Length: 315
Ligand code: FRU
Image (cartoon, rainbow, N blue to C red; front, side, top):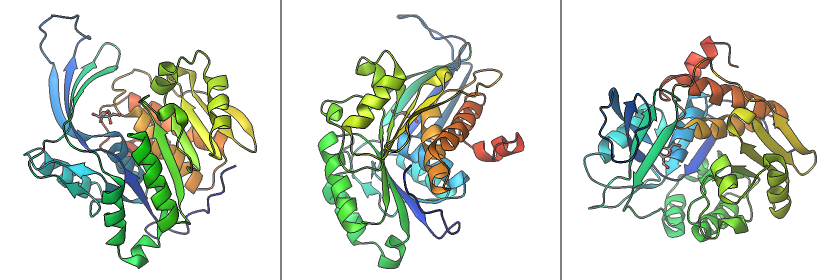
């Protein structure tokens, strides 16, 4: 079991998330169109997205103080992204602007027939570098930095992620570190050294040829230095592994109707981190994460998610 001290009080500790913020242009379509078709969107919304910022927003809804470190363009879309993060209580003092560059944009077809989301992502914005993160951490008020409890990375460039984990281990040696491996990229199969928790996605496992999630997770976990690993597998539930307890599985929580799966993995990750910070054992944290991610799939977007879920009985 990962040893995480229970949070002594909301606002006392905070969580840093390192990764991207995007503009999501979500077109709701009746069904996913065939190639070369022309279809009408039934509704459209433009929202801030990006795995790590989605996770931070949900952590904030769960009562956690959060800060984001990532890069920003200076085109018209970057203003609403910052405004959304501020509205949702996410501190952005570690954000690194890149004048003249554009906001990463996801063009998303959300199928009303299945709730699936198909994403075409465009980016030309540089990623946050270890030097950017070092400069940001150097500039922090030491009293505030001292209350950082957890640093969560969206695993992107493997060499930079590894360097940033080392940096955090040097500068903030008391924090817990987690890494999400959502997409297989050249070098990710080596697994970053140093995190306490690795959150694998089904897309990542499938890209590596996994047929059976449990054995895949156990194998990855054994190759890693992490104390704890998870793998969310949609309607087959979630798998977890701890060095002390081995493999565990939590059944999925399916909504009455699948409405919107966009960001469900980011919600799952937020609830796992929150559960471990609450001191829950991994099986209980997975079960709670499945319930929140499942509830999310039955409604549109992330706004007000935790409050709505709480009204429906989520604790
Ligand atoms: C959902 C998401 C979207 C974003 C895309 C980036 O998990 O973070 O908000 O556009 O994935 O890959």
